[in-house]
Image (cartoon, rainbow, N blue to C red):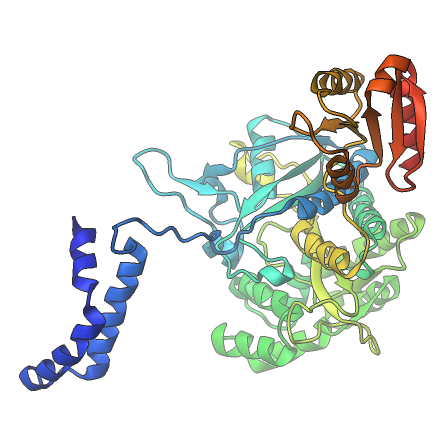
Length: 521
């Protein structure tokens, strides 16, 4: 009823506007033509939303902000990436779990520092207060505490949700997948941490995304650095969150935020600036252990000693060519307690994450496309959920699948290579009419043998149409039936790429399809 009234009010509105404007200007001196135009525009917009004059509702056909659909070609690329990542996780001995897409709100509250404002809270409907999961790490810690698990190596691939301002061209969304690998348990220092970095190295190398660097740091080094630079204890976390923005903002802006917004002294900010510009390897850790200021912090010294140990294991894992000790790396999440790391992809011709160049070694002019993996050690998180506060040391890594997928999609678009969206090995076709039953019998034989096959859903399809479908879909083989083939007990097998045809005994067809498709793969 309200909709109909609005529609009637809107009808003839534009023609009525002029007379209304003149009368309003005389009767109501405070009202301007611009204000009338604005109100008319609002009514016209309402009319468009409610529908046309026939009263039909007009749907807005779009996905919600920060989300997207995936077409078959995109899903084929995505599946390939997932398979590469999962095979790497399994190669390193991980098992998998799953957790609910929403958690109790109190489970997630206070775990993410300043990013807690990005958590999606679900509407209170008189029951439990719930929120959509922000990552997979906090639910994992809750799972360990709830099930009293003290030792596990697990991977988890699932969607997470963040009320962020999306930058979808750069792989930033409000709904997205995370691919996590974590090692929980009491082990000797830096051995599991080094394996996590090895996993990142293997995945990024296998996906062939271009050049990359894995930046490492330690939360204890950061906290020690803040202490010796004169940062008050109660400002450690908030200053850490600001330092974490160095990959998106130049140092001048970061310093301004520290001083003007966070209330840090300019002298302390300048001292931090000297340290966060440092990069290196084991040699930098050794140098900082001798540093006059840093050596005064027991926390920093413990972190630096572990960095040295980490690099010794990374040398054995043969990955040190891509790993750099970078004091600017902060990672703003509150739950990290030790080693932290982030993989950054550098590749010419790919859109950068921000207009500001990221910190890199002197002379490096490649374009940074942002973080594609990150993680670290979080020894206290499980204890936050355990009733008795029992700690389970954990270290893990999260692969930034959406950003990787964006890059793979760009590469696929730039390449002339055709992406197959199905895995059909053979099409069952007919050369004459009235052979639907025979086609269905043959496709059933193939399906029962585990062969990926399909048939056209027409009684009498033209042979040319069937062959064109195979060429368009990338199906490598066609099994053609005709009256003569049925009499002879054979099937004409056609290779789509070369158009070569050969008669195969019906009993041998399954083995021949397997042989030819396994050779092709």
